[in-house]
Structure formats: structure tokens, C-alpha cells
Length: 130
Image (tube, rainbow, N blue to C red; front, side, top):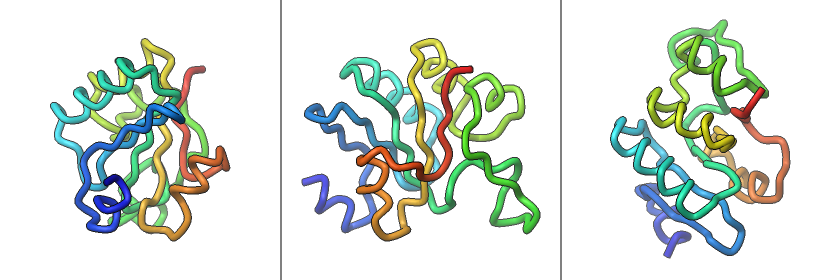
């Protein structure tokens, strides 16, 4: 079912308990959804929250509007909050930080990225503890 939803590019949530990963939605997350997804990741004891987006990771500013935007390979939860990096809403980000839950932000539309993320390859930006 998750594969079919991915093919339609309209999925919201797919959790895979066997590998304990948690996926986020493709497009912008509404604050309530982000918090709900973060809570669900805690409930299933996921290893990470995976956020598939249309950009390659987390940037210092919107890369769609600014050619000089700089992507972070890694950033701490706290720095993401302090710099207002728009990983997800601050409540969900704080919850992830409090539970030491990494968030991997990656380009969902780049062929093979989901497989690479699940294989543990360095893809996109990892938001994690200090």
C-alpha cells in the first residue's frame, strides 16, 4: 500500500514497524499534522522521522527563492529552532528534540533517495541532538 501511495505522490503517512522508520508527507506539513506525526513516531519507537520534500534538505533560507541558499548536512534540533529553519513546526521539532529523535529531510523526487535513506546512506540533512 505504501508503494502505491508513493507512486501517486499523495501519501501522508506510512510507518514500517519492521524497520522502525517513520515517514513524513511530501508537501508542506500543517502544524497539527507535524505534531501528530512526531507523536506517532514516538509511539512506535521509530528510529527517525523521514521527511520527504521537494528540496534536497534543510537550508538557511528558501532555496526556491534564493540562489545563494546554503544546505546543512547536519544541524541540531536546537539550532534548527533558534535559526527558524522550518524543518517542521516548533512544537513537533521540540518533541523530537526532547525524545532524541533524529529527523532526516531529503528530496523525495530524486530517484532512489528513499532506498538510500532506508539503507542508512548520507542523504539530505539530518536534524539530531548536539
